Image 1 (tube, one colour):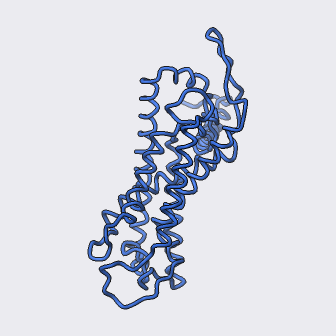
Image 2 (cartoon, rainbow, N blue to C red):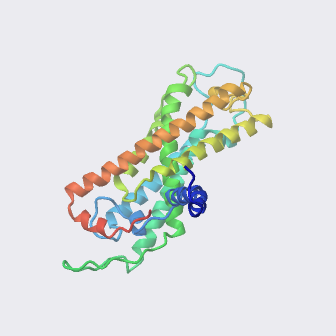
Image 3 (cartoon, one colour):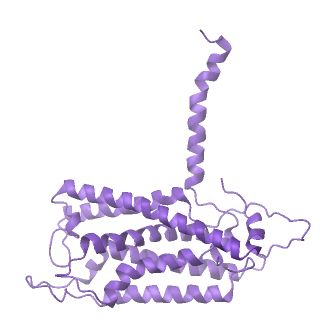
Length: 302
């Protein structure tokens, strides 16, 4: 049966319109807009919309702690105690070639941004939203400040990297014949995940599922860096051509497979973080019913 002529233009325009809607939905899911923006400066377990002194203290302690550990990790570099290979001169700048240290620097960066966000909103006087019991005055949609968006992105990627670094190091990289288990090793390869788990339990902003692409992108970026570093003749701190044994670009097939595996694990790690954040908000709503009032003031982002 042939369609009437007047139906043909509608049929032709249906597919482009559907693709346009999919594209717009994808853009909204990947953007870094969220209302109200003061959630980036507040603790999940507090009341009110202004950062508390206790939360400000937490952010200062977290920032000082992670920066101190990062500085100690850089300053206390040494060859493995059980290393018996040829003598090599330690190059401190090679600290920056390791994925673990990339991840820890990002944790310190997001801790600094989180502290800056809290300090900014602590200094503002118009955060409290006044409302009566009978009538709720909804705020206007606020554009998320650049500082909050930077913090959200850094927090998201740092969380994904921390989980993957801990998992990959203890399952694929750690060699008990070379790597000793000491306090600093545990802090940078286990404490990193502990810090971000604490952040997921304390912070009030959401974790968006679509943002898994940012963490996976960071993992792929490190894979490209490692390939470039190998191509220009770079070596690890022991003089070996591969930064990690599993990421040896002399064997491109296995190296590509390792990068792809890490990207997949990164997506899974982000899924775990998303579930933990959703669980946190659900528990907070149950044990602190007043949070339901704030949820009604949260404007949709999609």
